[in-house]
Amino acid sequence: MNLELEFLGTADARRVPVYGCRCRACERARNDPRYVRRPCSALIRAEGYQMMLDAGRTDLCETFAPGTIQSVLVTHYHMDHVMGLFHLRWGAGHTLPVHGPDDPDGCDDLYKHPGILQFQPPLAPFVPTDIGPFTVTPLPLNHSKPTLGYGIEYRGIRLAYLTDTVGLPDPTTAWLQQSPLALMVLDCSVPPKPNPPRNHNDLNLALALAEQIRPEKTLLTHLGHQLDDYLMSAPELPDGVEVAFDGRVVELGS
Amino acid sequence: MNLELEFLGTADARRVPVYGCRCRACERARNDPRYVRRPCSALIRAEGYQMMLDAGRTDLCETFAPGTIQSVLVTHYHMDHVMGLFHLRWGAGHTLPVHGPDDPDGCDDLYKHPGILQFQPPLAPFVPTDIGPFTVTPLPLNHSKPTLGYGIEYRGIRLAYLTDTVGLPDPTTAWLQQSPLALMVLDCSVPPKPNPPRNHNDLNLALALAEQIRPEKTLLTHLGHQLDDYLMSAPELPDGVEVAFDGRVVELGS
Ligand SMILES: [Mn+2]
Ligand SMILES: [Mn+2]
Ligand SMILES: [Mn+2]
Ligand SMILES: [Mn+2]
Ligand SMILES: [Zn+2]
Ligand SMILES: [Zn+2]
Image (tube, rainbow over all chains, first blue to last red):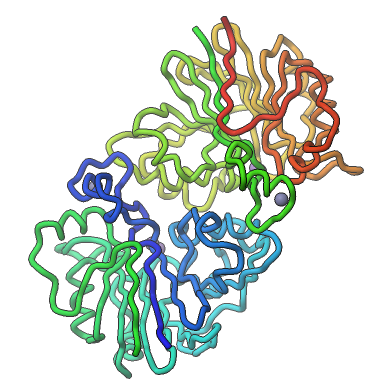
């Protein structure tokens, strides 16, 4: 039985290409759809159960038949991570459970008019919760809104999905180090900066975290166009660290 | 010199087809893209100037090359009318003026992080303002958030764009009656109801307003799937009243 993660989107809030930008990375994405980055989100699946991690894409209703996504796990209520919920909510004939952090504001009127979304009680940091076949452990992150990363375990296979964040709170790092991780998906939004940015990892911070936590594989996500541009002429990333692209599927387990 | 209005979207917040709905109208839209209704919005153009009325569509960056829309005129800050601004704002290399009602809340963090959007001073009811080649007169509407309809004049041709609203405030009706209207675009969201709905016109209210204001032509917009379903077996609409569809272009003037 396998655990799969599929990247539905790997961009920062501006997406790639950036509207009107003529940089190398944006032009590359315009010329070759493999380099387009949509809002940062992913599917986790096992045993036919699909859990969506964030819902920033606005084509979800057209892409997924009703009932083929069994639950949504939200990292935080920034628009680039939840915009698709504003479409999903007005569906008919089925319901969709949404799990997420304790954020009383949520996003705009989502809580007031949930439609078919069933907002579940907020997840508590470090308290494992079963969602479908997965055991999900919420991991606090450092961001400008209440934000949770997630440890996800399925039949002894462990992955972590960590965005949006700058660095990691110590207790989160400690949790990640306590048993082997097959995969770490990590916020890496901008190229190396003299001073780390406020709400997201630059490449220096992301590589330092990979070194510190030592998962089998690290995939960087939430990339901005400037990081793509930088990587087009940068030295190779360290062993075990790669950049994610939209549509990539990672299979974990036997 | 002509004035043109193009419907970019004619749906209520749920859109047509509704995700997962099996009603006749939703199935028709699934089988024939001419019946798909996207978020309620329009383009007004003259002399090569394009003003967008509301920005609920999420494919605006892919549909309009940077600089081809010269300004945005927002009726109100409900998500189905402004969602596309969350993409447009992160553009590069140009700016985009946004005019709208006096709504201190706006929508989520749009005011806080406007990016390339240049929010203009709020428009004052009944005070005509020049935007590009148009004279725009803000007309208060009845809705659950501060909402303005607009009278738009170009070389003596007058049209009105009135959504979202239930009925009309008396001063707005008086303004609309004071000189001939070539076109009235009007909120009509639901089929005839025993009790008019709270925030939108049903068909009864919309037809009564057309009768009272007597524009040359009335086009109904902001339609929900139930109204489409109703119209599939309803008697014809009165002379001069029609239902709008996405992509329809109305030419006004000589
Ligand atoms: Mn983000
Ligand atoms: Mn964020
Ligand atoms: Mn609306
Ligand atoms: Mn509205
Ligand atoms: Zn760029
Ligand atoms: Zn329907």
